[in-house]
Length: 369
Image (tube, rainbow, N blue to C red; front, side, top):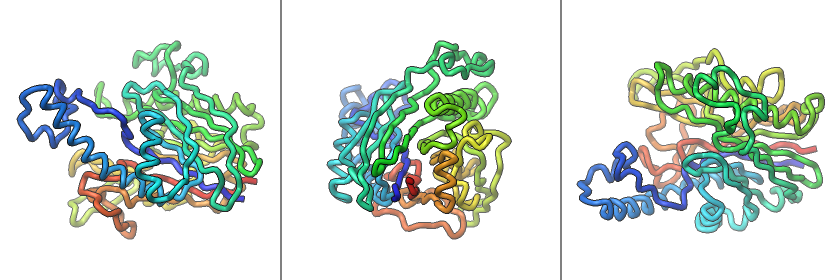
């Protein structure tokens, strides 16, 4: 009995327009910035036209990436509303895979932009086993104090014990697969952002992600009991916005050079440490684990894993031979692939945009026994 599960940061699946670029040029789209805009009314008109035209191409590519993942259960990040998700599923996914993801679950989290977590699932697996929803639990309300994860490093950043741990949520979904229980935790940790306080964005925001990782671990341990956590069927899926290693890209675009650089520490270590769970993407070669291409120009380019499927020890043992797939056909043409990894992009993919997302879907087939 198998289940295919995937995670995908779909990148701003929005149901509303953002007009903040009129007053803040840093938020203005680069295409609109080419034109002289004389009034806010004119800006709004241009932004609506740009967003709608751009969105149609983007969501066709997002749907192609999801269809390629072939998941029975799909965990999504950066979804605006359930209405936006339904419209996307009906208007785009349905044309490619038919009546696949009939069941959709999400709840508002803490993100200031209103981008939330969502889970879509089929009524049965591709092999015909029924998938039954049991319950959904949001943990967006939990504080550092309640989860006992507040640290001096957080205090230095101005985060108080009574404040919420998760920048979005840790959404807990219980299902059964042909009667066998499985618990899914989907999360979207604090983003790195740019340099600040004399540190890289990653360093400056690390205490927040460490607390979020500790929070997820506490939630799981409290749910199942520390002594029994390893025996249970659970999986953590999501964009955790951190990496344990990078593929550094050097040289020019015609003759790029690639090298793997291990990090001294990562918030992911909080989850994988002491055998708490396994990052099964690490079953792939270290040059072939990346799910995102990062660049700030030719002098700063790397590939890294930000998107994770983490298995409980029991699931990992039962699926010792399972190797995740990373769907990269929706990446823009500017993404530099290591030797032997190049793929044929989906039709109409652009140099920078349109693209399926800045992230790649990650999917794996698991035996559930």
